[in-house]
Picture 1 (cartoon, rainbow, N blue to C red):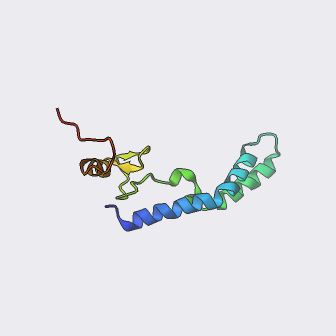
Picture 2: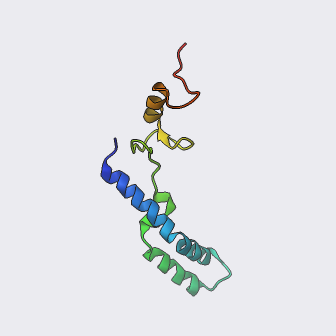
Picture 3: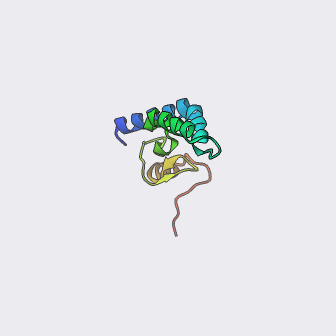
Length: 101
């Protein structure tokens, strides 16, 4: 099980991303638009730098829904390999069995 603080910090980031998404996108479009005057683009980049860093989508860490583990995470299943194996062994995932040969 991951530390509770790590899980909570990541959830806080997820909420921040959704809160600042529109503002961040709008400012990024202004900054990237080469046809606008340099002064206007610079002001937009200053405003963008004032937005919290944790509101960037790239700062969200994929974590297991069950254990909170960050490593060996399957995106499609939204869980770690350990949690997947435990659920499969107990027969809670339909159609999945432990391989033996």
